[in-house]
Image 1 (cartoon, protein in one colour):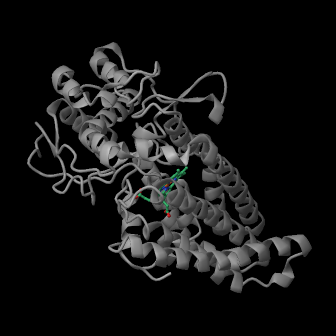
Image 2 (tube, helix red, strand yellow):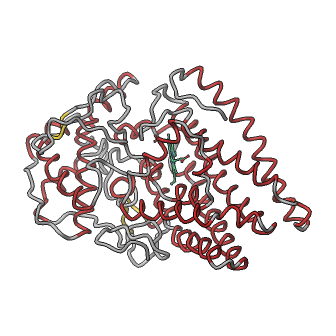
Image 3 (cartoon, protein in one colour):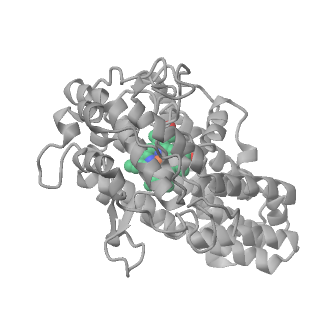
Length: 453
Ligand code: HEM
């Protein structure tokens, strides 16, 4: 177990990056008005009628109905995380409701509300401080990993047994989008244990144990990628823009040129700028980047600084684990240890290939779900839409190229050698395609931060 404390997110070989207990799905009665507003909030309600967002009445309903809850005496970590989830959902709906309405009429976002009212701001600030989060919607503790319920509690965390707790839109594609993330993260127990095993293998200079952990990491990444592939059918590309507005942040976003203020809080006059909800706050890829020392090979540019900034938007223990991976892998020189043996080098390459597969599929998602439909230049997390993801994808492609140059292919046997050759060839051709795509997209999105692939 890594970093035990009161937090709902522990990081261990059992639950991986999921919360240690399944989320609290409804608030206690004393928070009845908040629960009721959230039930009435979605664009479309389960009976097909328009909810508060669908009627454009969410802001007014919050202003008229929501009391200023005193949460200062709440100590139950499960309730605190549920309150954080629920207040951040309401905050984002409140701030972005005007953008959603305008986007649906004109395709433009206009301006969001720039003041978070006291009834949301005050308890949110308190709850966020208690769980060690920024007071804004995030991937793990609100939108995604703390937003599922088990249909049948006696069954496991399979996608078909999952349902949402909170939603903005209420459409099936929103359900699929969020829960595919959860179903992927449900496989991260072995990812965490094998990552620790890789480090231990180097520490003990135990080649057999090192290779066995690399194999488990590879096989787990394979499973995670298989679940990721189901996104295409579980969340339709043409629906994504209809619920994406609500997960935008206030940092680098033209809808919030002066940030937002939190009414009735000690720092009320300070404008706040927060990154929006994004899969970039998931910990699978940062763990992989760090374990395989890819982060150390990222170019020194503003895009890589953005990658670092994203790492602050996650539960404290996720952050601690990801940082531990980076420090230990660099200290132990995982890559050098792998390169001293052909079998380890091949396994290391296979792992790089799964990171490539993840990022390549992800780049396809971004083109098909977003870039096809909008010229808005900033992604929900505040990164430039056409250059940030390629910055990292090209780092992986380059690493495959560099590592493969050091692998004596003749040391590998028949079919396995062929498999590794395919990995090398694919990375090479994807790099050329990516170079061309980014060049072309930069014409349509001229002000993106530039970089060299
Ligand atoms: C329709 C599906 C998806 C779309 C359109 C999408 C879109 C994006 C975009 C635009 C970014 C850029 C960061 C930002 O928000 O500013 C991003 C980052 C990221 N997303 Fe997604 N995403 C999708 C699904 C997923 C899934 C299922 C995962 C699984 C955990 C995921 C994990 C990530 C990661 C790890 C990053 C950072 C990538 C990197 O470090 O290179 N995404 N996503």
